[in-house]
Image 1 (tube, chains in turn cyan, orange):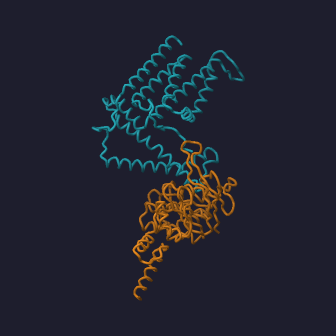
Image 2 (cartoon, each protein chain N blue to C red):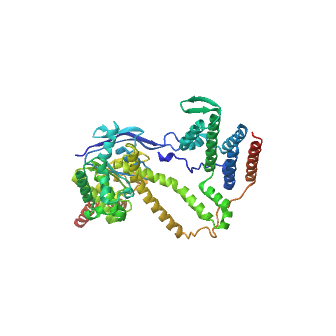
Image 3 (cartoon, one colour):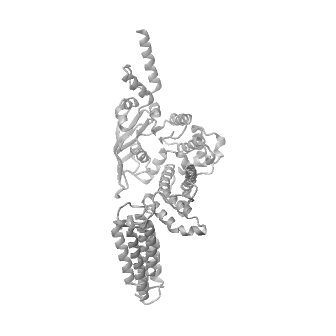
Length: 267
Length: 288
């Protein structure tokens, strides 16, 4: 049941998208998000959608896997859609009791849903095509300038990679504890909200205990191998921008410029 | 008081319909008689854990059925829940499921879920603690302050406090020192004697199962490779080694002797049996 979450999942591959420098991909996602929030018209949305579809096609990630990532957000998407449907002023289409659906409401709701979906799918494309280690390496490298103001960049990226690394471990652990408590007759499926929340205690307590135990063990293991933070630490895999990265970044710049121009002309 | 448990044509496939689909056990058939001690051995990934989680209804079979006392445990929701209490399952490293503030409360978790009244719960907690040798003084201590071996006992008590007719142990001695192992196995036998219970034990230690089990089941890639009395199974040393398993140390010794030309019967698998053989050999040699 818990095994089905796709958060932080990586699908290995050798496509152009997979081979790009992680920094390029992170930058592209930022550019993509900014452009997505600037986009206001059909034309600019079409441009963004074309970009997303092309990127997905090149990466050979199955669209189904991307849609699956949207599932946990379904409630938020529906909530936003409904809210926008009813609470945008303008020309009324249908109205019943105190509710009025306006033409603007429908358009707003449509664009917002589209925006959220594209936002999530774009960022999922990053995590699907980039291994967690490459991702944190890229982030560390991009944040390097912050070291000047004593921001612990290396430590932050190390914490991120450890957190990502332990997600599957903790899921497995949770499954085991759930099975063990069920074997002692614990019931997680019936009763009201309060009883169900209380039924989680036998899962959460052992889970926290084991998470702390693992953290302790990991810290000891790291110290045994003389880990002392980022000072003077070298990397086995150095990041290098290739020609493809510059080309992709140029495409990103053009995309952003295109959306800004379209926005300027009110399109 | 014990019942039989019957596994009929049992198959289980994980993650059906995804790229990760994989069949863990395939068309298993066997029956465990009331009061029997069944040992299950097999390599890592042979389907042992999947199999035992079917016996108390934690996993639903993809195909086939599990019958408890002749009736399917999946016939309705109530029957499945009842099976959880009649078939106790002690997982590997059970100490990682402790969660209550005191040892007493943790052991009482199972009996309370059964809906028993406070007096009965108290009686059962004390009986269970007695079986595993947890002294009364420890009952009001936090389980997190205990040593590893004691935590294991408390966790086992948490399952046997439900007084199940069948108890399944998955590697009950994993990670314990030899004295701790012997104690836990002795506790299991004490519970079996007192309640005439059926015991199913998954183990990597051939010596443990050789000593205790009436019958062995050897799993390989989700199917039964060998089954029978320990003597019969350990006589198939070649087959066991092919699967990646070993025979008990005593059998290993006898096999070595046989290959050196000493006339011994290699079906012996306990120290007593081997000792008797070697002594009679010695006498025979002295008389000759």
